[in-house]
Length: 255
Length: 338
Image 1 (cartoon, rainbow over the protein chains, first blue to last red):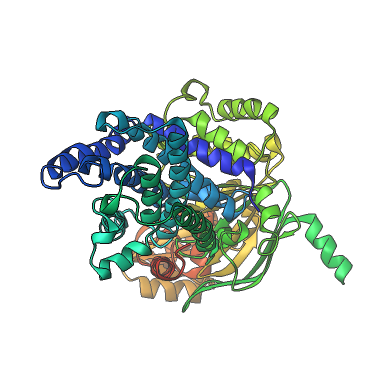
Image 2: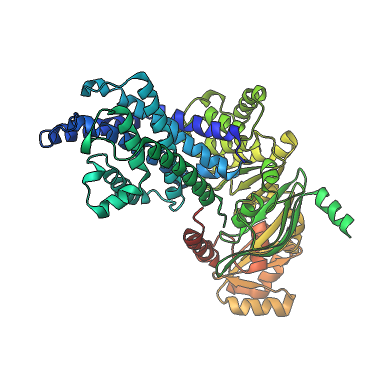
């Protein structure tokens, strides 16, 4: 059972804290821009434009994916902070189902990540991309579904830890590999078969691939999308449902 | 019999029967039974690690008991957790406020989480703020508050949804004496003003004097229960503490001459007599020059605990209690990651 009041109030709290913490807002926006312009700008001297897109244009969907990945995981990891500082108890003893808490947290991640992805997306004219209104809406919708899936994954991860020291473990062993094995920085087609396997089981890959379809529709060959759009959408929707269910289960355990 | 049983459940706001909770090899709560009258102040007393917080966690539906039953407001704490949660408010040992939100925001969050009707929310939050004496700090972040202010805010928050039972787990822990006595004034008014039963734990014996009834718990078992006055009668009069050059001989003399059973603790012997003021002169006459010091006091709950267990309730660092707490914590770290 999902209580709408609980979901709403959990999202409202996260949103309020997010806009209050200016440094967090700045750093979550700054990271993708640093990657886009410094890494992307540098690499584009090395990697020639191909299939009608420059390297910076090519990594733009990946940078949106990165924004969503980091902000969604960060949002869910706040559960560990809530446990550490005691606030989680206030939520756990309230007359609401565990699943409402999980859905509330996943939707908080979704709202905040989509907002940040939207801010990064607004930089597309700087890169010389032409994206129509319909595609912009499409990208935001894909971002929302992807963010919901990754936030749910973050909740599953957070349920295994109860101190914030585990944060760096999650960052180094899960988030960074997920980013590099997602086709964000280099086409999946060019990866060696072993890495390609990990790329294929990574939900982020399909989210980024869907954004490639929408933002670089004309890109051809290796620089273009790797999978059919329908497959991308099906995978991220399925991942959302599966991960939020696992998140709900992981929250229901009692001692 | 079943009728009587149902009546029993309806009359008492909290009913606990044969409750057991084990964490792996550690038995934190070992078959306890007690009940609590509506709109009273009930005190759960014991040293750290005696099983107080574990019992509260079961009553609050945060833990599943290993065996036994617990009922709150007529609802089963393990099978009707939602109904139980609606009937309770809790102030935990460690603060559970969001320090990055203001006092008002913390209260509003709570009101919404407990589905308080929209038109009532503002009023109840305002009442809670004035009750906690925090009207002029309502829009300050909680991280700027003192320990006493935070605790008052938490108590007020726990009452917003009009619970039947308010749990206070070591409410004065870590507060300075001034805030402690202020908080007690505030707490003792609650049953009358808010129509609520207070269920509190403490290991400060003197604080338990305000309770209507007390249960003393040690090593997971209830070793005595009753009113504070009733428990103090267990001592049978006044308590005399005495130091002498030879405590062993003094104890023997007291037994032979007066029939008093004295015990030794940290080179002081203590005993209880019906009339301390009139026994002291004759005791001193009998023990003569060996007496180094004598003091007498009216019995406190600490004396009751000392008499029942042979140790002081505050010997937290030496008692087995803190070991239990540590092993429970490490067990839970391994098994209860939810």
